[in-house]
Length: 323
Image (cartoon, rainbow, N blue to C red; front, side, top):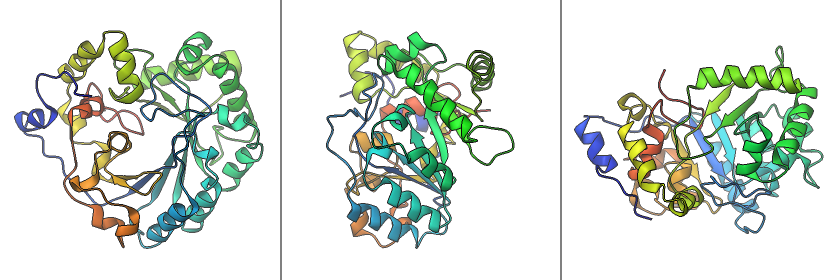
């Protein structure tokens, strides 16, 4: 899909004299596939129960082999789909734990209540996995409209279970962070202000605690882009993103020290480029063709969807980019 934009993103970087280049890698993001128990309206992966793309044991083992040669990579950020539904998920987590990496699981919460996942919460705790959990609102109607009927109720049930295990509680090392993304074609509100609202409402109404809230902008790609087209909002949304371009956010985009590995071993600059099949360094390459992750360091592949990461306070996998 060609995005309706007046000033291409690369031109905007030139106009504002923004130089963005790779630094040393610190984070490896791994997308384990498109299989998911949900089918959210904003999903840039277009994940669902019907998707067959999942990571094989062979690919997972190659990732671990390369990680063993990469002491500079401190964080392994595991995503999907619902990564927990991939048969290789637990072996990947265990392998990363042995390599003393900080492990993040991007969890949709409801997957923890799926048949066959009964032992997953304890497994995450035993391996000291940080959980970044999707909860686009504390209100039931809003969550269900975006993520499906009954998702709010199940999400709250999963959060209570994680709290009972110590996740999100003061005095434990079990980190539980939540993610907000807008319910429509607009930018997220101030992250700190919204975090306080979440903490107040979830504690007072449901006795739920968590560590931090990350606000993430909806990317104008795949399922959310299609929704924008259906609602005749794509042009206005792209104008909103480009009009709110933030030079500071652009200087701090997450792809400066992160690379993304697809379920099939393909290498990308980020998870969004992965879904658009924009390969790292402009050439399709898999993890089976390299001997070290540092071989991937090169010019970052930007395109117009990158306005989504650089608008307003900025957006990254750990929330806003601007103070």
